[in-house]
Image 1 (tube, rainbow, N blue to C red):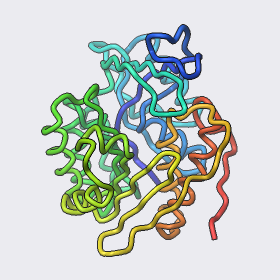
Image 2 (image 1 turned 30 degrees about the vertical axis):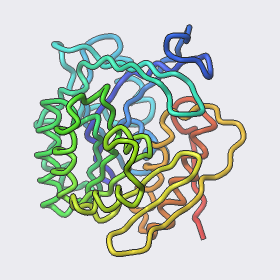
Image 3 (image 1 turned 90 degrees about the vertical axis):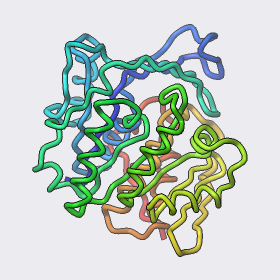
Length: 304
C-alpha cells in the first residue's frame, strides 16, 4: 500500500455563486469531501494504492459518500458506519481566495482503533492524517495510537495542519497534539492561512520552519497560495518554487489537498524534494481549473 489515509470524510456543499459569501449563496453542489478523503481520491487518480479509514453516519448522506468512494475506486471496508451520529457536512463558499465555510460535525470524529488493522500498518509506505481529524475524540486517540505504531514499523508519517478555530476551538490543545504528532517526524504541510489561524498574524515563514523543526519534523512544506511554495528541510537551504500562473481560477477548494497528493506521489516514486514540490504545484494547477476532484486519467510531467 502506498498511502494509508486516516481522517475526515464529509459531504462538501460547494456554493454555485462565485464570489458570494455563505450568507449570500443561494444554491450548492454536493460533493465527496474532507481533506484526508480528498487526498485519498487524488492519490488514487494518480494510480497509487490507497486505503481510507474514516467514519460516516448510517443515513442517506453516508450512503452517498460510500457510493462516491466506490465510484472513485476506493474500498469502503474500513469505513465506520455509525447509527448514533449523522454524517458530517460542510458548506463552502466559492472564491478565488480563502473560502468561507460552515462545518456541521457528526460522524467524522468516530474513527475507532479496530478500523486500522495491523496488516494495513505493515503494508503502508505513508500514514497520512490532518489537524481536522485530530480535533475530536475518539478519532484523536485512534490516530495518535496508530501513528505511533506505524512509526515503529518504519512507515513515513504525513500531516496536513489544516487548523481552524471553527473546527478546534482550544488552540493550546491543538498545538499540544500537533507537537506530539510532529515528534514522530512526519512530512508537514501547512498553508499561510493555517499559520495565521494557529499562531497569529506576526509569525514569519522562517519562524514557522524553526518551530516545526523544533517539534521534531525534519521536512516542512509551507504553501503560499498564488505565491507558490516554500519547503524547509532541517539543516538544508530552503527550497522556493512559484505557483504555475493561471488566469481563470474555477475553484480553490481542495487545491491544497491536490498539492499534497502530488508531493506524496513524488516521494513514493522516489523523486527528490524539489521534484516533489513541482509535482504538487502541477496537481494544484490542474485542480484549480475544476470544481470537485481531479479529472480522470490525470497524469503528471516528470520535472527536470
